[in-house]
Image 1 (cartoon, rainbow, N blue to C red):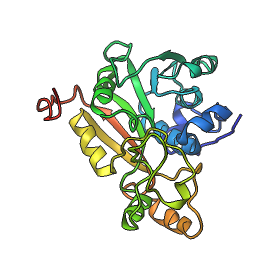
Image 2: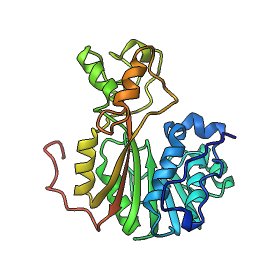
Image 3: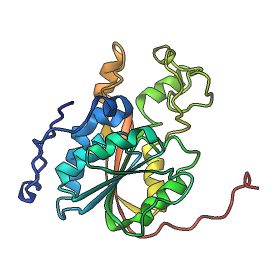
Image 4: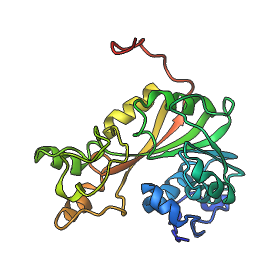
Length: 272
């Protein structure tokens, strides 16, 4: 079991939430989720953002083996931790950690919960797999109560590594279009198989998108995932540019639900 301890932000001591509690990550969680390497930062950000009110129910969309949801529930003092995932293999372990996990695909249909059911909704590294973000995030807005907190982590298309890759003529790693192998990527990525990342947004685009979908931004954090470290001198770039949300390799968006999202402008030209 990995141990991750987050520093306690100002303003949360009076809630009785100890940030010295260890994580509940298993080896499966670490292997499955890139966010596991930034769990201390994510936990601290969520605790600080929810300091004014103890949340009663949390939903983790794409919960995997449940370690992240269980850890966040411990630190936030959440009474009920729920999770959904498309993978049936993860269900037993997630439930053993106290997560009320169900198998569901938010990109294919509604979440199996009523309106305004949750105070906190998290989604770490799942949105870059479906072809569109809209379907899933509309469901996020529906099941999250007004004023509820959403936390979403994603690869950053505008990250320094992608900017440098394009400048050198390489394909960004997180924009895949071939299921057989990664093609056109930088040499350090060539031995990796495609994982299904169809696309990733810039932080600017994602902030604008979330506003359209009925959320107001609390803060966007820069993340530097430790599971993949840049080689050689590129670590200096990561140490500098990786501190800013616009150029970090990954980002964490925190927002609050302002109500139902705005309606669309109709079907696109590609629709039947």
